[in-house]
Length: 286
Image (cartoon, rainbow, N blue to C red):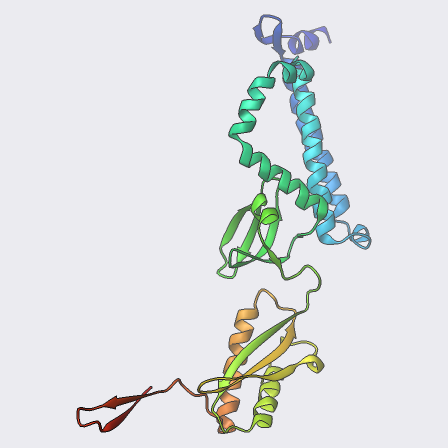
């Protein structure tokens, strides 16, 4: 027993009153293991199905992230105390240094505060569909400094949290997974308006990813220069895949318009040219 005590008390490093013993390294390693075990148990608890009956996925994730950071901060404080560093003395003695570091890492701290806001407010959750600077992304991870999302090209985007909190961000999933979208189409003048409206509604109903068929609405929205402009509005829960769905609907609309002998016009322009003998010549350009 005495031999074990001697081994644990062996000094690996000593600088003045500061020393690191084998026992210190053992305590640090034990602390890391216990910290990771506690975090693992918390994660398992939050991911239990019975727990999710009372808490949503995004809420549980936000709570886990906050608890994880708090536990690691406590563990770090214990590390410093174990090696003999007084935290209060360290903070007081390095106040000027911390000010300098704070100025240099101002943006980083800004991102950290934004991360805490995102995790605590839960305005953005895992799986939400966001539109940030024209990019539509699905949130895969919300970290303390940055968040990660997957765009429609299957590319991972790393976004500073301050960009999410300080700029205009559209959250397509914030209120409901069901969102209304629209597709515009123009047809030639002289087309039967009622047939066009009916064709648009039937085209949308053919797509399997459309929900709430009773809320599908076709409108005549504009008398344009060379076309009658229509709009079809519909609901879908496939927010992230909506551009592919719109493409499919446009193909169906095109096919049905051709079946009903309704044409989609192209812009035309009449140019009148005057010759020297003042005779007018008409030139039609497409």
